[in-house]
Amino acid sequence: MAHHQVLIVGGGAAGLTVAARLRRLRPSLDVAILEPATDHYYQPGWTLVGAGVFSLEETRRNEAELIPAGVHWIREGVAGFQPDANSVTTTGGQLISYDALVVATGMKLCWDRIKGLPEALGQGGVCSNYSREHAAYTWECIQGFQGGNAVFTCPPMPIKCPGAPQKIAYLADDAIKRDPALAARSKVIYATATPGIFGVPTYAAPLREVVKRKGIDARYNHVLIEVRPDSKEAVFRVQPASPADSQGEESREEVISYDLLHVTPPMAAPDVVAQSPLAAASGFVDVDKHSLQHVRFANVFSLGDVSGMPNSKTAAAVRGQAPVLVDNLLAQLDGATGHGAYDGYSCCPLITGYGKTIMAEFNYEQQPVPSFPLDPTQERWSMWIVKTKMLPWLYWNRMLRGADHERRFIPGLKR
Ligand SMILES: Cc1cc2nc3c(=O)[nH]c(=O)nc-3n(C[C@H](O)[C@H](O)[C@H](O)COP(=O)(O)OP(=O)(O)OC[C@H]3O[C@@H](n4cnc5c(N)ncnc54)[C@H](O)[C@@H]3O)c2cc1C
Image (cartoon, rainbow, N blue to C red; front, side, top):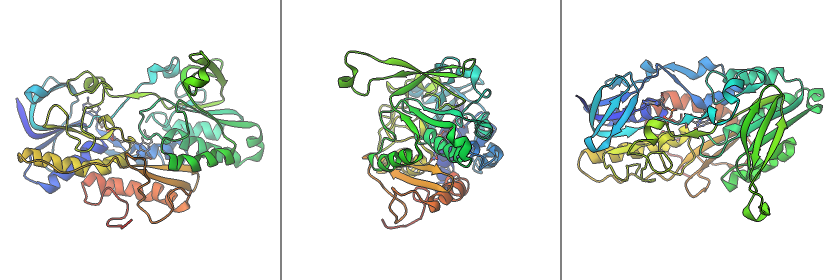
């Protein structure tokens, strides 16, 4: 049986960041990554692929170039976890043991939970920035839009980057309004399963103003359940806003016809995690929300989208989590107690149009924690530049290399 001191399952944003940081802080450590994919994508760039700003290729790198020097890359997936025996089974049938395990497999996209969607996606105006294969098709749909209803959906939480479903609606609205005649015969509808525009009140307030200013028809508590490509209809289950409003009715169906339909699919923990002893009832890895250490298996840690903390799931959150996890993991290997504590930091650059972004940064308490000495609730061109230029650079050159100041945009900034 192969053995590694630290085994990282998943070589995405989270796994690569942890591997790089571990190697930098303790070069003698034997670290391995279990990752079947040969390409890695900067997923936060896919909103911009769908808006015609980036090409898909600009968001791609070879995984081989990103695996830190000295880290063993096992090009397989995990097929089972045996935390009682400190081992995992791989898709190729290997048994690998570890001293410490980091689970970073990301989330599963559940396209098939929406009837008709798998068949409809990628043609007839049905697109999604959440699909690597179809993000570029979103831009084709926006460019080819001739009027009618442009419908953007958002499923129940949790999803990765909860702001992304509405960002593309704002960008499409901007693109449509470049042609006043097209705008006059078009309606942009944002139909979301959530009860409000955004979960963090400080940022929800300016977003409501954005929706109002743009004249977007925002419909809340709308869960997409079916796509009918032949009749170009999207079917929603509409939940009562609150039990008091329901007047005895559970929910109702609403059919919205579409000419363009951008779908954000429901998401879940991958089955191999959800069905393992590591999972909480939610299916996500059952870790302490501050230490990122498993609540039952002390040598198991998790971060990124598959971890069960109640933070907003973003690559930015990984910037906050990775240093904490690495400190606590190294302490655990040394037989000591780690003192690193993650505060729930996440950042969602809320693009509200071409050249405009609200840089929403917040913690578990939903308090704003801005990295810049500016009112974070304002739409700014400077934050658009941060989103389109600075953050991709930071991701490739600092975060994935395990650099020190990966959490805040400006190292050492006093707030
Ligand atoms: C459209 C879109 C827009 C986004 N916008 C933003 C944004 O503006 N800002 C932001 O910060 N974040 C954004 N995100 C979210 C961000 O991309 C994720 O939160 C981030 O990638 C999470 O990192 P992760 O390592 O947990 O998961 P991932 O980066 O998805 O990596 C998971 C890795 O695990 C591997 N894996 C899966 N199953 C197995 C298995 N069984 N065995 C081994 N390996 C496995 C996968 O191949 C993958 O490489 C966006 C995402 C999308 C899709």
